[in-house]
Image (cartoon, rainbow, N blue to C red; front, side, top):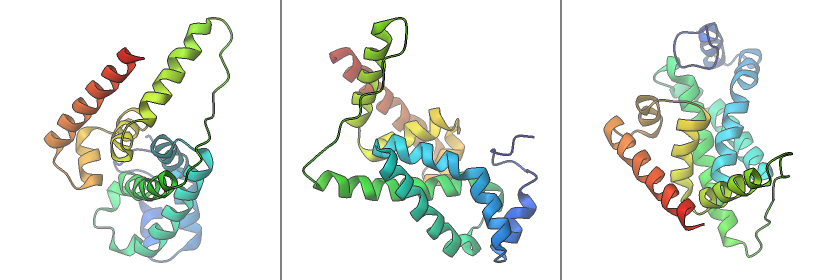
Length: 178
């Protein structure tokens, strides 16, 4: 069974232990879900250091609020939503600063056009609102379906699907312009 899904997992007992204040159980949750939280935070912020900060802040929030988690079987989407919220807050703070560092990924060997396409996508994603980058990250980086994303964001599944469709259309438009 996939440890990273929100379905019943071997981590169910770990979630219960962490909710009861067991630090070892909480450490196991960190080991299981930290990479997902980092990936989503990175897509939202576009900066590895800021994403790492967002994930750390998310774990602090999760530790404090784990007892209030209503659906322990949805631990993954709950944690990712916390990380996404922290990333959005940090991204808003970053926009207020005047200097923006642009990291250009190394060009892959072989076809030089492949690097340009990836850079165009990175630039198009960077022009999206942090909330829209969060949707794209949850859907395509983590592979969550619209029901899981909707539950994590406290929205309707149909509204989530519609918003993802609009964001994808916006991305396509941006990429066609580039």
